[in-house]
Image 1 (cartoon, rainbow, N blue to C red):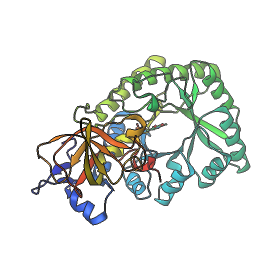
Image 2 (spheres, helix red, strand yellow):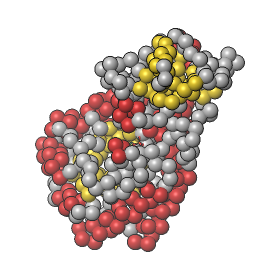
Image 3 (tube, rainbow, N blue to C red):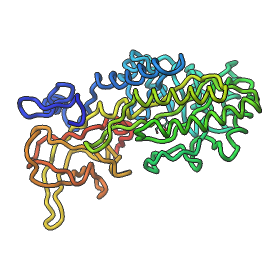
Image 4 (cartoon, rainbow, N blue to C red):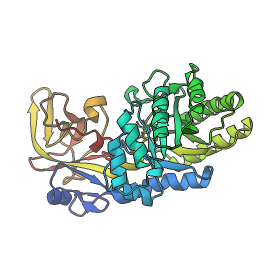
Length: 398
Ligand code: PLP
């Protein structure tokens, strides 16, 4: 099995956290998103424990709500000692409705509207991650109107390519997020921030990409950020208290994907940071990470009901399900790989390779291609694993 919280019971049915997947589909209907809370908690602890043990006091993982955002998740995150990264008033609203403390929220976004900024200020959001100089000016203005001094991190791009998909790779220079270090614009961004009366600079943020399996690209980002920070300490007298290294640790979508040792990578990153600071004589900053996928992806499974099997002679066989790109657009967007299981026929021999298709009027509406499956009939349940991240939050009403 892909993960230890998935299993097979005596009926030959898939189990998720010990519960029979078929029984869940019968009780709640399908399509159904299932999320294993224990797994979410265990994933949070891999971060909180490793960061607590090896990183400077006050270091913290922030759950990236863009991966999955609903009210019931936030009490769990709070109990597990996570902070939260939010990217919209909707995410702020949801987190607060779930009882999450506003001071533990970090507000992202490359185009925060005036309404967004004011809403976040009025809700007492603890930290803004400012994307660009224009936002600095707007935020300073609205914070001033409210007699506030707002804590900010400045988003910079270190120019690292961690070899992930173009669409989910955000640390390169040429991208719409943050301000590049290499062109000198990031230094000017910091200089401007320091002139703002109503803002308090805490440090820097960078996010280099997603589906990263080792510590190395993060260590490279630390090197670049520390050089940058050291230069600014000398020229502007500003010392960053915080480095936020973004999200990005990978998860296993298929058996052949590597296992990622998150605690080991966190320890390696902590050692690298400590050595870098020592060498430069730079005071150790607190570290923030923003894991999304690695907290919720593997805790989620989507259950679909099979509509039928259609074979196009000489071409291929399609299994149609009663969901698709509406609940999971990732295959249609970037051919994301998933593991698909026949929930009532676990362990049965496959009789061929199928394309699992959704039911939208779009030829690209596929869940997965080339899936080995046993013989299926109308009404059977198909389970797609690792759908806890970027499925519900990317779902549409198409
Ligand atoms: N932080 C930022 C700024 C992001 O853009 C993303 C994802 O796009 C994340 C965190 C979460 O990344 P992941 O889900 O890969 O951990």
